[in-house]
Length: 467
Image (cartoon, rainbow, N blue to C red; front, side, top):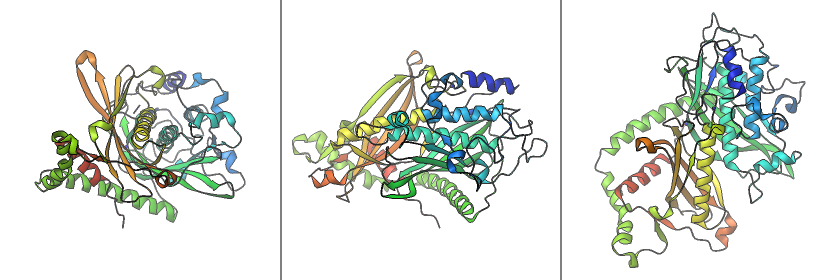
């Protein structure tokens, strides 16, 4: 599977005569009672372009907001793309179309194309934008890209739930979870790319969106292909009561849209089934054999360190952490910390951990499912703790480094600390590093708690097979 106020908030509240409730977490933002969506084809640069228009005319320009005052958006830390999306949402309030399919403020079924949104990054021609996304190795800053994915998912959910009749219930949309974010191939920072996404599945009060990062494969091959894929789940809360509230259903039209809907439906069922199975397995004694096997080498480290395997290292010795005070510039429209910011900070810590563990610049592969357990507010003392849980060296050409990052909301005055998020990242190293003799060490647990975490993650990493 987060959460800000500035002029956009006051602007939105003037149109929303009710007061929005607090977000449950994530990239929360309100659907005001008097909001009107841009569901027509002349929408703000985001729907599928009509046949007579080029994609550039119908995509949000990632660099456009960098040349405009930032006071339009809550907070000032936002990336260029986040700013552009906030501007797009603002335009939905200022330039409503009046289009509406619902009856007397009820729910209206919408096709995925109605929420489809794209962002264009003109890296090849926009030097300023390129500098915002370039890392020290002249590659893309994946953390900023993940942050943008979350912001775009929020805008897509906003479009799907908007109504143009002025009678829609006030609701708050928050990020509930993020399914696997899979890097299919490296993303270049010197070539244009786009992010495209749409709502693919809707439950009663939740919706899943699939987002894809698309970029030409190389300078000699202009054909575009998917470089990264992610699924975000948002839930709707009633602005007054904070309880779940129904949202517009989705009606897939094309065969591809129907396929995505079936896959999302199956993922939802399998996740519920997996949760039930994991609870049952946790109570069974058969895990003891796996626990003892994992703990065997750890006990050697603790009891006979001189005889420990030199190619292994204890989990606790791979730990890294950082802390920060959540500032107002990092808030969303509800005064809570923007989920994309949390994901970026977690990724950057995990990347640093993988870098120091491997000894070479790591290569990002995927983010496993992210659940937003507890909202993070402005002024909270936030601690990120990371550790390498385990490594997989079955393939000498592509060893895997699995890293856990846990975010804690800490209140010194109350002497309390609660987990707000858990993130799981998978990295590898470049093949040329392995050819030069690099060896990735094995990681072993020293406590039963660590061993159980490793087993849980290994089981969670088992691929979900779809029929």
